[in-house]
Image 1 (cartoon, one colour):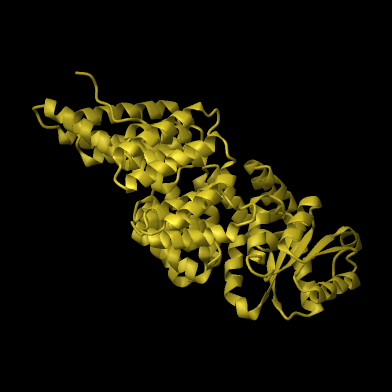
Image 2: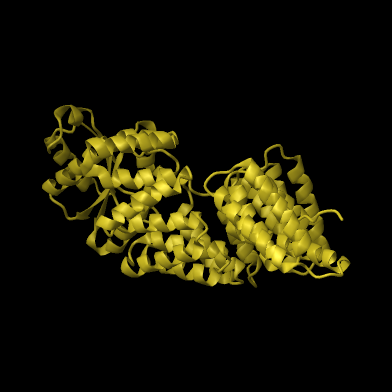
Length: 522
């Protein structure tokens, strides 16, 4: 094993495998290579405990830990809970009969994988390669851990200068940091330079992300579809296209991409959750329940379990006939996740409201929602998931104004809003805007001056384009004045309503308030 002695002396390795014979053999191979600090884990729980106690340099993890205990799930748990830092190596060991799972593994970022059976030479080769790469990129990972994006870029530059063998990794991370900082032109330069020399899909999907951030949605979707045709096993493009269509409210298209990805790599929790929500919103509670059962069963007994999954499953069951027994069981399972406090009482009323609404008892549903709203107001810091669910239930029971206030509170707090709730909020806001426009139009005898509207909308589009990469208060104020002018002139024009939506998207991206459709006083 060609690593410096001082590196081998200090290296801490955990071997995670259900088979004791295999664990012992791998340990002997590592010991012969000079690795002195080796521990063994026979289960995922044992591996999580060891990694939490002392951060290992390397984890050699077998894919198969038994039912509901596989290497993919434990890797996801390690990464999402920040138990295993990016600077530690995670090698996944699989058998040839689970080759498809290896494809899925790439989504959870293992550093490499070993296909069984393997020789001691193959083990050493993979380990050396992974450790060297981690050592080279360690300063980059350290800046990523503390979310110092400028530091990430600076350390990537050092790698590009001093260690060109890892240039592709540095370029990919650097470009992602630039996008996060809103420096889209610089990220574009990287992606175009890489694409000119190489056909790697990550550069092409990165460029599609830049196009999306610039608002060029159709072109982003077109390019992503081409990547999907050429690299059908590159999972990132399925999720990109699924999210793109989901955000646009094109649920059939989003579902298609998510389903294709699930058929290739069926272990991605985020994708399973997205499918469950899409099935539910599309009026297919049976498939929604099936999908959410997979999520709940996969996360049961782990730190990945959360109340949101149980709530989505419960909402699916409410819409199914003859599901009373299963529904009651799931509600009991949800209670411990809520902690049995004021939040739990509030969520109980939210669930009750949905059940009563489904049964046609509108008065009972609204009474339950009123109790839930009162309980929510008493909470000092209501959990985001509880506010989400309450807002959705408000929309379902006709309390649109209360729902909008809840959504606005989430956005003000910087909490991400579920796509389904964004769509509902958008529909509700548009309906209110259209109603206000109709009322204003009824008071105005003369028709709008469409030539003037066209001119103002062109000016507005140019201002929004300038605000996209960098928010300037002076330009934003000018844009809001134009919005008021065009709404006063043509409140029922779809282009005017769309202009409000476009401005609000950019404003929220930069952390600023939405602009409500407003007419000038006569």
